[in-house]
Length: 530
Image (tube, rainbow, N blue to C red; front, top):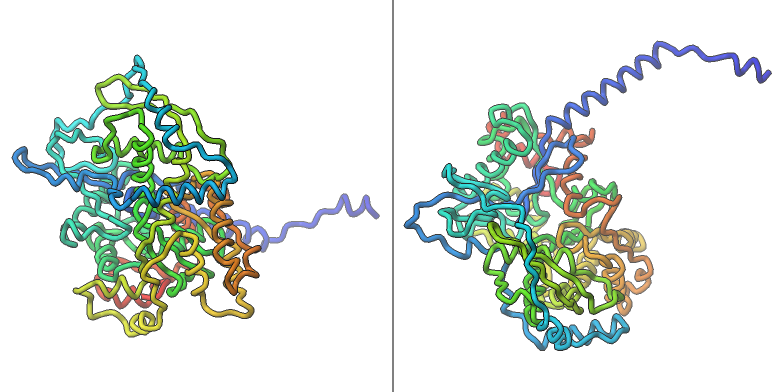
């Protein structure tokens, strides 16, 4: 019997062959579709752009430099990369010292001892150059973008401008019309340079645009018009960063904590929907951690004595040192003996030895403790004096019924708890339990710090231990590198996933539909409450 079965093979039916051909055809179509779709994720510090078929996006500094006449004096504020931390005081730092000492169960080395050690350090000149030069502007280009803009000699005839500040369009420095013109030049140049797509062919491509969870209607409208009408993409989908972050991780439900360069946004996402009442945004991000770290290093006799974060190159150095040395591991052995290199175009590199104390963890902790104003959708929309009359009644009802964010929030852990506690009611608080069990940290400012998962989990548990939700403390889990992905690129990856979903095909708006129907067609197909 077994021999008979072994020698007998079922003939393949014509139907199964047709199914295989159809499946193969679908895969080919999906691959072609992904190669013709561009995902744009603009941020305060970087623009992430790439085809949906790319494994990772191109990431460039989101800055543009415009040429000006020699006689024009450009404002120094536009050249700065970091915000000041003038409101940081020593009493606060001493209080954080005590807190860290209690939590780490260790004898922290006094900062004055660290300063004494660093006071003895001397740099070493290396017999090598820095490996790069100032951007060549001899051909006098009208504008430059990305690294080319960032590495222009500050004595050259260019003004630097960052189109996005604190996660929103930078209308403080320019009119909305002029700002959109900057974005047009910047994005078009990035697509042509890094994706090798000439703008004359852009009509053959679709686009996915990622926007903040807390958005401004007028800004979104201008961006849609930029991509469809001015740049000429064939069709477009707009979606929120937090939802795309869950798509990028393959997670259906999560409390998404996005710590970016200049802001921290939190939102609870369930099955592709960001719950309005759970959204909030704090005006604190990675650049603030960098500034505090620089302040602490100088207090501890930083060996590079003339370092000044007002200088663009020194600000970039501080960003590099923060990303290299800062962490959230309360049990790491300190002090640490480290070294760093100072590189300037046309000069030999310098190597500085340095002794690092608990400033490597104190930098983020000080920003955690600092009270920060927070807003959710109702408050940010009401700030707009020139809001369109076209806001739907549905959105007005949503705003009126939303829960106002507290005037002040102290700490990212408390902000997370506030967000989750404002989730819609569910049977036995099942939705809140799911959110506490999946706190997803994304963005480039905090998620890459070692120890972030354990430290943040401990702090959130501490927040709810003495509350009515104390029974949920044991379920708290924090994820910072889902599927070993770069946290700063998770949302972009989610945009590429979104573009290929069967369920998203009804979300696309064509250029012709936008020109004919405008916001009405966007409201009908928008995947979130508009």
